[in-house]
Image 1: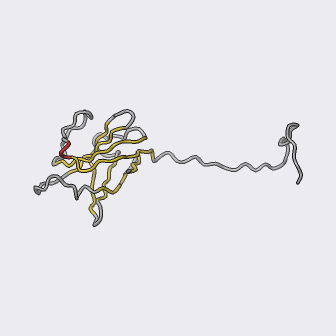
Image 2: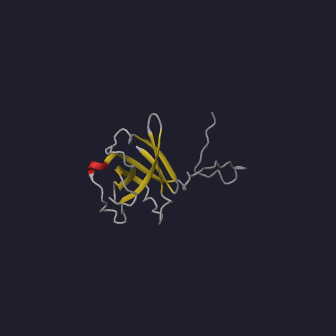
Image 3: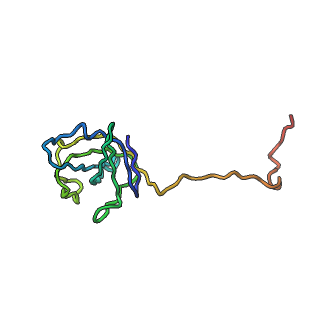
Amino acid sequence: MIHINKGGLSTFPVTIKEKRVNNSGVTIYYLINLNNDMTKKNWWSYGAQTITRRYTAFSINDSIGSPPLPLPDEGFYTYKIYEVTSLSIDFTDVDNVAVTDSQIVETGKAFVKDASVTEVTYTQYTPTDNTNTLNSNTQYISI
């Protein structure tokens, strides 16, 4: 499962180079589709790749593009990465994008979270005196 942060750059390892479909020598681009497991809404974006010796680092950023397409709601998604030969694929109609299943090079599960939301922090309360901490329903046992 890959983890994707909303509102910034997300990089995760994939094995798309080994599964390449088109070996004709043309320039290859990668298009990622996220499909929400609950709402079934689609999100599309081009990704950048950095090839290492063991894997390919795949990066997506929802704050780039014209206009920028923000990542969808937080939650669990099924992702598919497509190998395409053009950067001009129209995915404004997110349910009718001109790609085929034969272009899929990787599929899997993704978790999208909002990186701007931080965890809740708790502080410990230390009373300064015992005023208002005793009541008639409390009985203390001395051992």
